[in-house]
Length: 90
Image 1: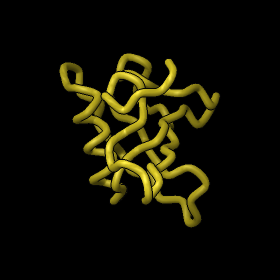
Image 2 (image 1 turned 45 degrees about the horizontal axis):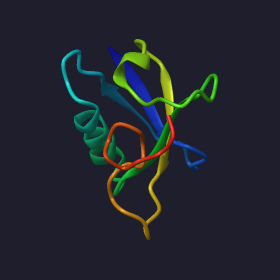
Image 3 (image 1 turned 90 degrees about the vertical axis):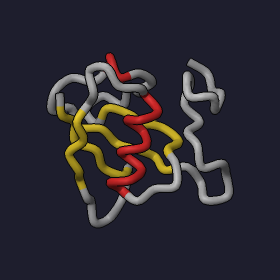
């Protein structure tokens, strides 16, 4: 599976293709996103088409377009997403 990820509301919009590992971890997937988009962390991921919040790899389908909200520079550099140790409602 391959998804296209861009920073939400970024101008100019830069979209990168990220492979979704079948047996990989959520943390590793987030790490690849941060590396490709040069982010210190991720606050939220959502499907571009519906706005649905993504909290696990199984929610992603091939060629989904995903928007990422970067973590604030003042906050922790880890994700605030459920299941990542950062807390949050799910």
